[in-house]
Image (tube, rainbow, N blue to C red; front, side, top):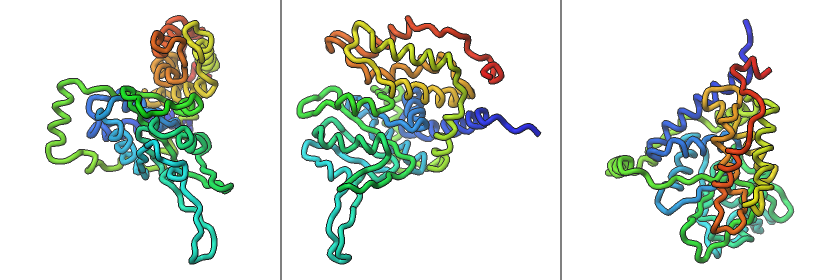
Length: 328
């Protein structure tokens, strides 16, 4: 009996898990399938998410719903100007009972962390997240502590009100795999939201549909999805074009290339394929790359438009595979 191709098995598992999560989250976040799917892709790719949108559109609910759907621990930090790094990472204190110092972990120690209004904290406090996001560990007073697995940071910021805020530095923005916006619901879906919450918030009765171990298996399976050298070249061509675009002051980093590479594998699997095609790259280019670009004359140039012009000009130089066999 022939053993199933690992990439095929991974694609089946990832697609089934994603469909379960999407259906579950849809009980809380209505009419935003594409955005929820983007969030799932980022989570399956072990990436952090920045949700930049207006107040009251469901940014916090999305994070909570994902955490509950995957049976993961969840904590929320409300970022404010007086928040200190130790309030985030934890502190080392002297325990008189044992006559020694002991470490008391901060709210970073969870599987899903909501960093609410992250740009309201000072740069010093914002930087407390850098090591956690990149290395999944925290160093306090010279001692290093591993964070739980899986570990996902979902941060929010309000793009309307900037008074008393501290814009995220490029180094921090670059650590977010994806930047998404939920937007307002349309009229029909907003009526459903009202009716749905007549008696209670649906998040309270939401149950887990996969386990944390299932998520780790999906994250490992994403790496098995096949991706051609020509596809990798296509990714590099797009990212390189952001660095030389006449309207861009700063383009995307190699971390952006890797993010686009990994998320395209996750998207291919969610779409039922064990191989990546150019359309996967085009679908993800904007949420993966736009927040990594600093445009010239900020008010006149939009990073999303820069991405669109690049996608129009970039040419994939090989044919996408018609089957897994064509990939080999």
